[in-house]
Length: 305
Image 1 (cartoon, rainbow, N blue to C red):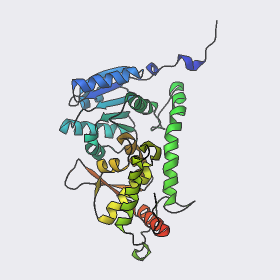
Image 2 (cartoon, rainbow, N blue to C red):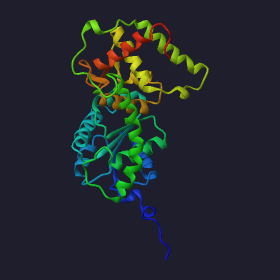
Image 3 (tube, rainbow, N blue to C red):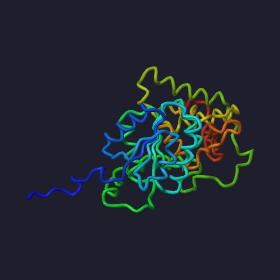
Image 4 (cartoon, rainbow, N blue to C red):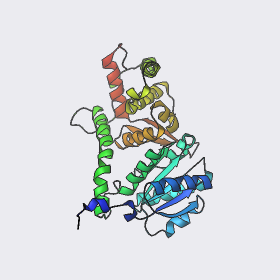
């Protein structure tokens, strides 16, 4: 009798099912296709309004998938608050998929790293988000089995690479071997005086590259976001999440992951809009701001691209 590696018999059907909530019949159908194509079972497919009660009845789930084809209003907000609480308690992970037009409402309510956000994603991005959520890599304390452990090892490699890059950026704010954040605010006299025009010229020079070369050759979302926030700080402007995603010059899904990582590393600070509960502003942490200002002061007049 031939012997086969144990891994050959493994399937995502060994995982608990995925519960789907959608803003419309079309949204639920698209989510069902993604979940089924990724090899997961579907526990149920319900409306946004019915989802909180249905989630409470679900004994176990690999993930909750929320599919949005527009701003879902109050039912969407209530559901996002509900899953945010459950995810924070480690009950399950979640994926929220939608379009660029709802980036700000999503960012205002989703803070937990175990919630994957996919904006205008193709099927590969959607399936990858579900695999990462279901793997449990964001819930290291939960009980796991052999199947999930084997998948965790692969998926964690993807997550670790992003974390490594973000950690390197965080160290730049204070130097090698130092904490990422500075506990004591810098004195005003220690902050270099940087012109907003100098920062804008660098941003413009970076964008001009796409006229002559494919833009994906120069994808550097962390640096583009840092520059945009420094420009806004100098001009005394506030930057919502959606605008920062545009400034990152990468797909919104990628920009949101970088935003989440850079916030976790202490480089960015989120501020709720006092006039709009469905919008969040992003600004530089004081230590990151000081590091950028010192960088520009040291570089001087030559254009920094």
